Length: 270
Image (cartoon, rainbow, N blue to C red; front, top):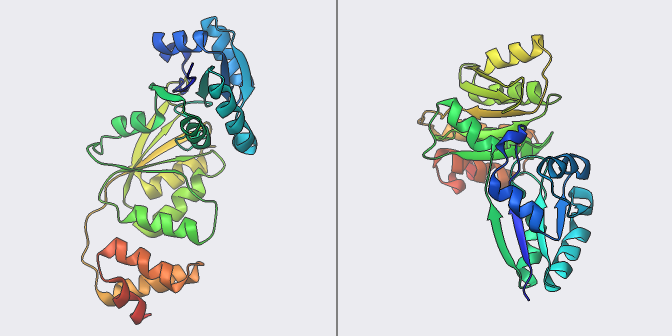
């Protein structure tokens, strides 16, 4: 008998968003692997489910993926959940899916609430095309490169931030976009103190500098307007990336992607 892995999307805050299918799935599986067993224990108690409960987080993801593969090879039904939303999207889960596939098991999904699509929907910035950045790196050249790429996107860009990092994220973003670019900040989505706020990037910095940020943030940056960039401007942009830690090759490649100018032209100009 072939086992299966069910990737389960769980509520992002409001237990009232649990679907009948999710409840039935969690009641029927042999084991649930969860990012936070205490949090998931509350969810399971709420729906009257009592499967075996095992932890699955960044620190033990590799070991647990092997365990999941073994259980599926033995024919068990395994559910994978994260604290909120869908596993493997800015949360642990990728290794579990790969292990299940390699063990010959069936991989399926129970879709559900998503902070990404919820914030995008209420932002009003459009959703035909969008980018998703997860959590930004805390520092270094990779952070600068990702912020730079976000700044020139012609699609809305969604990213996550914590109360401790949201002001720094917005300040650094303003350095790349300018102060006036519009942003939507969705805080504590679906929870009692949900807040959806719109304004300029600079106004957002001011707001959460003056008001203590609380709860998890899902932010949406409005699309940028295409700009004509000269070779000189592109070279100067590449040099600034090198100053933040990028290699010349990385900087040239990043700016070429941003501007559409030939990478070699930018590299030679540095």
